Amino acid sequence: MSNFDQTASDPAGISVVVLKDIFLPARSFVVPRSNLAQRVRAKRGVGVTLMATFNPQTVLTQVGNGKTTLTSSKKQVLFSQGDTTDAVFYIQAGKVKLTVVSPQGKEAVIAILEPGSFFGEECLAGQPVHLATATTVEISTMLRIDKQAMLRSLQDDRTFSALFLAYMLTRNVRIQEDLVDQLFNSSEKRLARILLLMAHFGKDGTPVEVIPKISQDTLAGMIGTTRSRVSFFMNRFKKMGLIHYESGLHVHSSLLNIVLHD
Image (tube, rainbow, N blue to C red; front, side):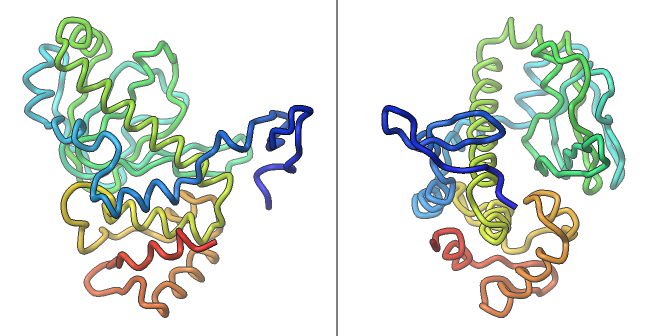
């Protein structure tokens, strides 16, 4: 099912995409596959160096009172969609999944956040309730920073404020790429891109050899398709030698060919 209705031309001759009655210039979109390819080739992502300076010790040092260290078990709900926002969380170890549920009960996975990530930051912008549910994927350790403590730190400490801004800008770029990917790429390409990103292809350093266990239901929720389609593509990738299973899921750089193929 197409995410957009049609492509047309406006009186000025600019190609536009009609999306739920909203007209957007098609030339304003950059398909994220090219960005991923550039990052893989250059071994560097947009803003990765800035994000690398963010470490648990920085947060512990710069944020004064109002922070608590939490250790959560696997599949523990940290907050639910609709709960009141009152704190920012910083992941020190483990992973956290953000999900949203539609009024019809359909669930979608927004992101799986790794160590070094913030979430719950919508409270800083005056958002009264959480728009997503945060659940740990595995045993995790994180800092819970009260809203007022976070605001004080951002106002009083320019270094901390600059680091946090750099992180949020980098995350905003990723969100934009995810949106364009969802709008324009096939479910097969979206799955290949997610697997490459989870294996840290395109980031500084060496990609991870094994992706931690993740269910096909979760992958389906991340790319907006069914579990059966994910299973079909995973089997296809395996037969093509693009991935293999050995004490976990191994992703090969050759999977990038699926993303680049027109």
